[in-house]
Length: 261
Length: 261
Image (tube, rainbow over all chains, first blue to last red; front, side, top):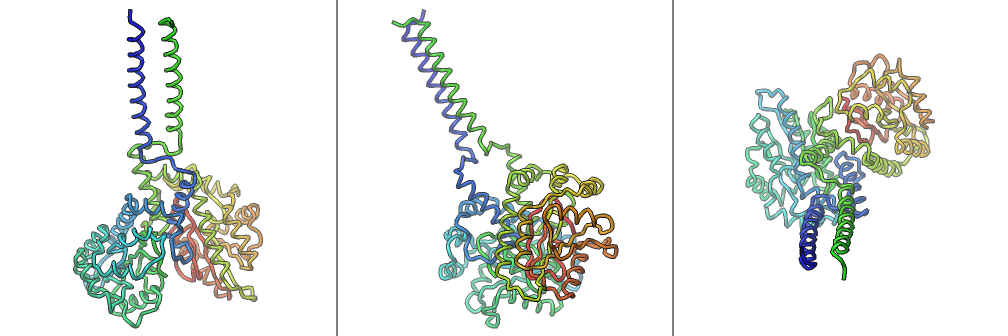
């Protein structure tokens, strides 16, 4: 017959084991990706999602800053893989479209690509500005640009190479200032693998102060006047994709962090 | 001194209580909104989200069916409130834009609204077609339309009323067949509170077989030829918002369930 001490010891051991086991189970429950959020966090997440979709579809009236309640959503969106997934899906569709285009042997089949947050990324700057929830700081942004270290968007670099191999003439069209940023921009693009494009076009003095829509329309018009056929036009801003001589098909790359009119 | 029986009974009762308590805690963990998903479900959710955003931004090449892996995402999107939230945010932005328009006393300030899945909803049909994952069935769809029971999108009905009160002339422009669906459509709209519009325009025989872009462009051109100024153009399809005489500003309402070219 067991003594009371023995029984109690067995019970205590059993309970310790049970508690340890259940703590582990509960711990893994709590540590899983979907942690319980507060009602406010849930509401912000839902709003952030609606806001991001509205921005991508060009439904939001001109805005200067991302609403602060979108901060957590955008941080998660930009840092946890969904931004890259969204970008990749758009690039997949661009490649499908491009593969169906009958190229002419005259070498005049053209494609327009924007530069900032299309070919190369300003994530490093925007990460420090709460993904656009903080106001744009032109001084800090210019310092960042002047480092010439914007990394490529890998999906867009791969698109660039595919389009070039296919035979399209690639025009990189940016609102960056020609006088001050021409060298740093072409070096940055080169170091990131954007090699072999037809032309890099920066904003020359005559377009200073004009909206992106006006400036980029004028440049595309000039490209068409030279005899090029613009089959595709890719940018992260709707102002890249509005106005005149848009090209036969436009594609909007994701960017919920800022708006350029 | 307690007997062994008494000790064991106390221990069993204690354990029972502990297990019940922990079961409850674990149960509530499991019952909370974010249930643990399988890796496949997580991947489908992420893909569904990318796909939906790409559709809303008009980045997906013409498609006939929603990819099956988006089914769960779309079911959740359409049924759990996010669709309405997205719609409401777009309508909020339309109202901001509309409030800034200086109306003329000549009564020629116009607005274009699409009908299906803009003013009134075909959710009931698409719910039975796995939210667009099943192929479109024109017979069943026509039966549904002929019931004349499409409910209003409440946010759009409220937009309709605001625009009308503001003084805009509202043109409802639909690809529905004029010969067979004119009466049922105007009755359906009337019963859902769409009263006092300037004109309901259905597809007359001369536009049969034309793309929505061509047909709707031709109608908008005619409206402008009559002297109207189209300030806004609202639809759930990009083909409502492409082509000619688009209006000064277009707004894309969410619809990830089907694509009309």
